[in-house]
Image (cartoon, rainbow, N blue to C red; front, side):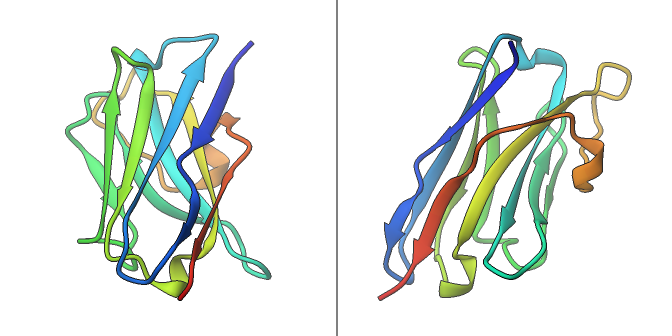
Length: 128
C-alpha cells in the first residue's frame, strides 16, 4: 500500500521556521518526483515546491522562493520542506505528493493533476 505521511506542521510566529517531512512507505521514492502543495481556507490548492528524481532540479513558487527549501533523502524515503521567514500568508494545510518519473529523472512537476499519490496534509499556522 502506497502511503505518504506528512509531519512537522504547527503554530509558529511570523519570521519563524518549520521543517515539514513527508515519509513514504509501501514503495521506494528512488524513481519518484515529489512536490509540496498547500491549500488555505477558501483558496485553491497551489504548488509550493517540487523536486526531481535526481534531486538536482527544483521548483519554487514565487511566493516562497528564497525562504523555502525542498530536499529529499532517498535512503530515508523522505522528502523535506524547510520553511524559513514564515509569514501569515503561508498559513495553510501543506500536502506532499509524488509520481513516478522513471523516464524523466530531471523533471519536476507543478500541476496537482500530474501527481498520483498524496499525503493527508499537515496544518501550518503562522500567527503572532
